Amino acid sequence: MADQPLIPPFGKKVHLEDYDPSFTNGMSKDDAKAREKKLEARMGELQEMLYAQGTQSLLVVLQAMDAGGKDGAIKHVFDAVNPQGVGVTAFKQPTPEELAHDFLWRVHPHVPPKGYIGIFNRSHYEDVLVVRVNQLVPQEVWEKRYEHINAFERLIAERGTRILKFFLHISRDEQKRRFQERLDDPSKQWKFAMGDLPIREQWDDYMKAYEAVLTRCHTEAAPWHVVPANKKWYRDLVITQSIVQALEEMEVRYPDPEPGLESVVIPD
Ligand code: AMP
Ligand code: MG
Image (cartoon, rainbow, N blue to C red; front, side):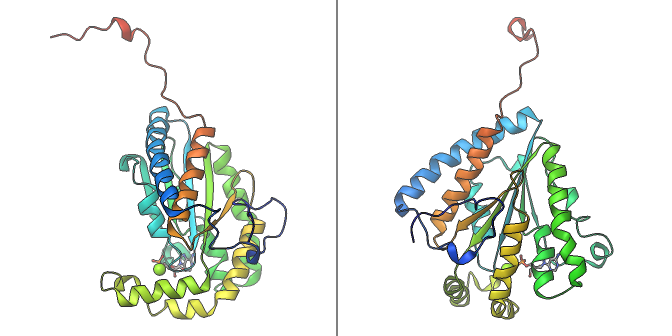
């Protein structure tokens, strides 16, 4: 397949079959890894400035099918950032208390405050993915959520949170390979759940649900990235690059020092 956009064009229906999960833009693994190392270091610097400046924040949303690489990406992309300035939230099946509220109730408290990077391992999008595929609520309820999500994301973006959303796109074959690896490797067996198999059977329904998300909740304020994720090294490079670019655009910088610092004498 020829060139493909990382960020789908706005206002057009996304068809995932147009996006090759094995795309690497002609890059070799060694080149990608070397480039990612450099960008990681830059991310560390930019994050420190984001924290010091304390006026903006960054939200990174990761969505994928099982074995799509969300955990691996978190581990590798954020190698060089100071853990003190980053928060990771993994969204699991909602508790009874969470289900007794609107679907965004449990999400809002985890939006990163000024100065911080927040990472969502799964997110409010589960409420139009797993919930839609399995009809966990009636269609008239999940159907309204796309607009609720757009309004929510607009709210936090307007208040100073830059939002980057990544769909880690793997092929069905690649998922099979990764599941098999989990079964065969004792250090990975804990990652395999019997419940992953029925979800794999719903692959096509999930792809449709993802296409709806990528089409209906894809805005300039909160764009989706369709990350070719069959190759882990390319996935990590693409995410790292996008985050660094966003932080550069946000013009994070150290705040001005207090006036008069040059004449301060530290007493003995
Ligand atoms: P994991 O990320 O592998 O630990 O699995 C978390 C599980 O929680 C996945 O099967 C998700 O689909 C499920 N989950 C997350 N959010 C929701 C939600 N809002 N409604 C139903 N299931 C959810
Ligand atoms: Mg899982």
